[in-house]
Length: 204
Image (cartoon, rainbow, N blue to C red; front, side, top):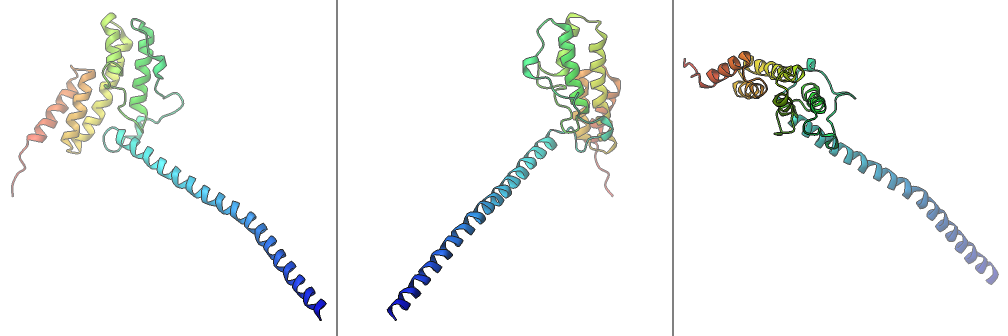
């Protein structure tokens, strides 16, 4: 009788021990998977947050509200020069290359329209083209660059005036005149914007 009781106790002990081993093994298998899933979820959430911030920043930098898709898209040849590649003073060809890169980026990159065209002072396409003209007044590449930038702003100013968005039209016209102060179309658009802003709505 005593032997059967001891045997039963031993059996119960080994059974509980085996169950504990199995439980620990299952936990070792399940916990890493759960942790991996949790980590993956956190990564996805963080990525979504970063994407939202980038998208918000890009939208804030876009010129006007809703770019014209016909203006072009960004690509491998449409990127800003690095700060290490800034042109040396007096190197006309280097300055022109830099200005052209700024112009290409600012007029065709749908996520960043207008950037580096007229701002910041001294490091934008308009100012670089003017640096070239200061030492070479007849440089046709620099003159064409300024005309291209003026044409870019003319298109947006015209669009805003056509939509009776006179504040935006005025800003775009003024920006375009920084590139080409004698542009008659931009002057007309600026006057149209001013007239629209000062017009008194008729009462009925």
